[in-house]
Length: 51
Image 1: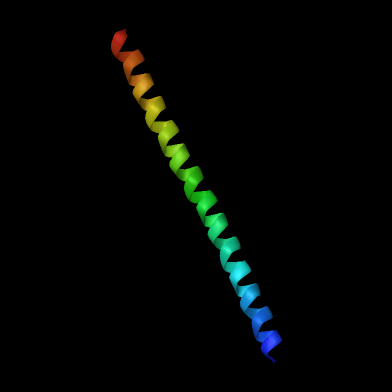
Image 2: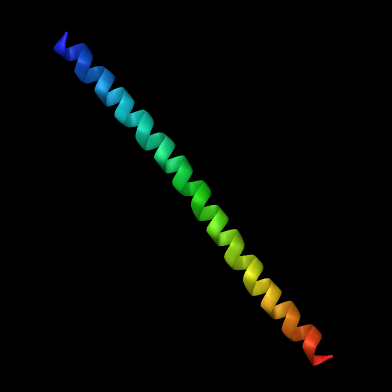
């Protein structure tokens, strides 16, 4: 019974880390996309301002 409990605990922990990793990857992609958009917006604004 203790072995089963340990197995369930490890499974839940692995599941938690998998979800955490996916959430972290999604958050990282969103932050990267926002940074790229801000840089692009600044560059486009400067190009339009020079004309």
